[in-house]
Image (cartoon, rainbow, N blue to C red; front, side, top):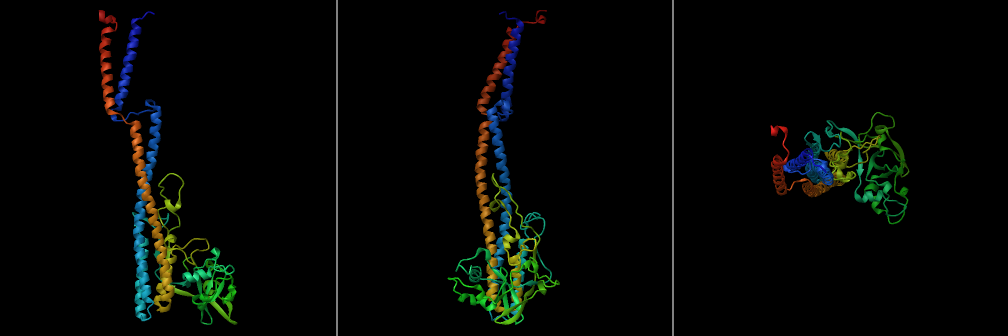
Length: 442
């Protein structure tokens, strides 16, 4: 085959340009990265993109966890303060149950108890930035407000553990609790005979005060029994929301409803008219909602039990007999209003009530808030554990990215020198062996 000068020139320039192109690509790696486009290493670039995506997810989860832990730390601090106020409240209720107190002493204790509740309301209105911690997703709205004046709220009987166990059991089964008939509170009724009665709203059974306080202890619950034997009478189940709002304030001015409701019963053969008992007290309302703020800490489905960082009013203060209105909306302030009911009863110098029902209510409120604080602490621990795991993942993925995309500097320097030498030699050789042009001969 005849080799022309044109072919020699073409091949030489092709190889020279190839050497320069290789040198240029190697020089690109001087920024520390050996992958700048998919064509550099298709397999390596695919791994690089996958690792980068994983790292982005991990970093997003880390940002979420940082925000979540900050939220929960502030919430926990508020709940610690509330728990302390609950302890103080309980101690003052115990002091109020001392019959040696005179009326002025009881009024003073009531003022201290009211101040404690007001402090709790202030703590529960805590913010982080401009967001309220306990408002649910309505976190720009101040959640808790205490009324300026007193309102007529229905009186209740908060049952002790023994009382709740008795009135919640299935009387036909003997000692077995009926989950569908759990009773923790009853409505207090005033009788026309000047006696007090209590209504189980589950079935409308009405019991005398003496039976609810003491008589139930004498019933042999190890065998089946007829509950009708022990109740004073029955008026059938009622809907509490027909007579009271969700904060327990009685509905007024409607015929046959709330303050106008009454029922005729028979007690020991004598006719008695009963009506709802009420007490004038301050009322706390909840303006937040029952929705949760989720900050996901790992891939997969959202688990509200562990991924939600906030607690709502109902989580902290539980529920009571009035807690839902006709639309099914919870009050979010059940225990707070029970505490204010305690304030009102102690202000009326009811020593016996303070030593019994008052102590039961303060115990229940303290246990409810303590449970909310424990739940928050458990969630915070879960987020902290997830944060530790993500730090390990971040380090591992970063190492993988370095392995697949970073340049071996020593190797790169050697190759750059090699190709630079080849390119320089090629230029030198080319000037000597390539055929001259017409201009070279002229």
